[in-house]
Length: 128
Image (cartoon, rainbow, N blue to C red; front, side, top):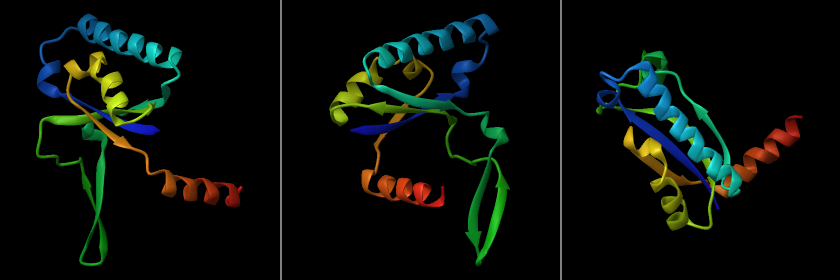
C-alpha cells in the first residue's frame, strides 16, 4: 500500500536552535530516509517552503478568494511530504514512528486513494 505522510514542524521547536543544530537534525532525518530507501519503502518526498510563502484558495460567494498563508489554528505547519510504501497502516506507523522528524512535530499518515489515483494516471496518459 502507498501512503502520504505529512510532516509537520512546531515553530517553537526551532526557536533558539543554531544553524548547526538544525542542520544536524535534518541530517538525522535524511539518514533515516536512506534507511527507508534501502528497505524499498521510500517512494519520494518534497520539502515545503515556510507557511508564510503559502496562499489559501477558497470559494466565497461563488468567487475564488485568495488569502496569504494557511491560517492554521495551530503552531504546527506542514514542513514536507513523504511518500511511503508499506504493507498496511500499522506497518506505515511502525516505519514513521522511528523517523527523527517526529521530534520536530507530528506526522499525519494517509493511505493513497488508489482508485482516484488510477484515474489521474489515466488522464495524464491521455493528455500526453
